[in-house]
Length: 391
Image 1 (tube, rainbow, N blue to C red):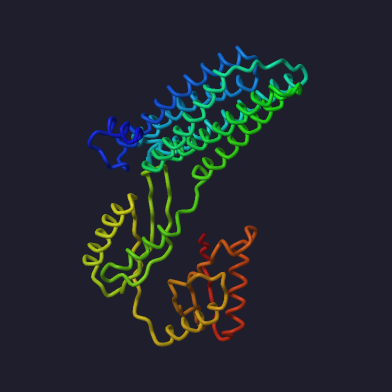
Image 2 (image 1 turned 90 degrees about the horizontal axis):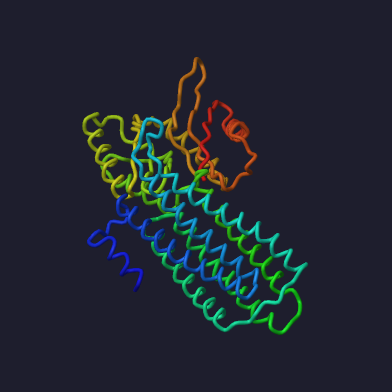
């Protein structure tokens, strides 16, 4: 309820979460709310930690302070990622959002590492932790606030498809566990003389570092370039084949330069006897309509198919029969029978499922393997296999 109230307060009538201005407003809202909440929690916990002489509470306080710093980094990241394209960055600056999320992750790891040392020293030189009811109440309230912050950031991250906000939501959920452990340590510390505060401080620090490690994994993947969603690929192919004259599509490649900055290229097949103006109008409409539907810039390469002779048809059918039993083979396309001096040469693209082969397998070895297989089955022809690996 509070989340929707804040969204309505900031966006008013705007509901298009793919719009850059809307995304920026939502990101600012998340960052400012996180900044205020974490600074308040950090200051209160630091005061409590000093008053009751608890290093684990102070570690939790610094963890909240790092979260406040994370909110500032996220805010700056969104601001920079929305800069318009320029000469050096013609596709915009969208990936800065991922970089800011990665900075948050490394900051979390650094905080955890620093407090391992402090907590270890407390286990060697333990101090009595004072038990105060007010400290327990405030820590419980802190857990409630962090649960809400996690849900708040994840909800906004889902709406604007932001890995940065989702990373912040994960971090906040990790803080819930961290503060819960600190709370337990204060209660257990009443009944033992063991250096429980220092031990819990180490556990808290390790949890912080583990949380940071998970954040690194989540944010580095889109920076490297992750595979598009299978359902998105299937949907685009189905839409392509729904247009007039289009009889096939292949080699769909999707590049992401940040949320809302996606480019795609694809080859479409059509009969070669269609006049250029007619098919060009169809292609233009496909690029515009499919691009708008999936919020991407689509570039389509025209791949005209000439009339297929009976010989070519029989050869293609025979090749498909030979390859059909191999689960690694996804499809073939651009099948041609070429005359080379006194020989006939078959040339086609072979699409291989990259998830079903070893990462060390090269295209050259795949090419040699399938060319040998085909030459064994069809001794009177030569073939040139062009390997395409899809994941």
